[in-house]
Amino acid sequence: MNKKGVDKRKKVIIITGSPGVGKSSLALLLEKKLGFLRLDISKHYHEISSGYDRKKQSYDINLKKFERLVREKKKEAGKGLIVDSHIAHLLPKKLVDLCIVLICSDLKKLEKRLKARNYSKKKIRENLDAEIFQICLVEAKEKGHTLVMFEGCRPLTQNDVAEKIRKSL
Image (cartoon, rainbow, N blue to C red):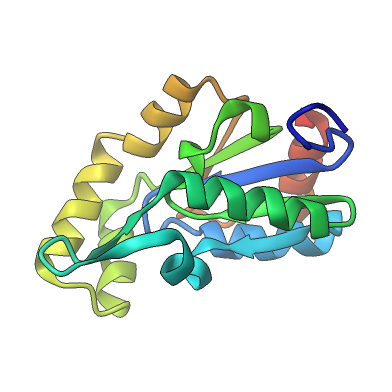
């Protein structure tokens, strides 16, 4: 353990991308293949947010609380931790071993997925724009994360994905 209380033997993989690109599906696959603990941030919004913004239809996340939650869960994890969230790439580089960015080049398919989640037209537009401009990818690069990219709107072969990630760790 180093001075910051971070155990570098345990790996932290973050999976990011716009809503609907397949983050949770990939996280569940990796949880099984790698034997890591999965942290679905959407289940923790109440404890890491400073409230809900009705106009934006989203939680205002406190990044310090988010980072603290990840550090706590990393301590609980056996081999490592998978953080599944469209904001995972906002974590500091020092805490992350690998950042997986999922993209969806098939915007019609992404729109269909978001409609199935009963997102408002405004929220669908916002998320499609985020995907078009690859906001998660750009911000992950700005943070300096080690990146692996996958197309989340096409079938991913489980063994290929797991192998590519093992090689990247």
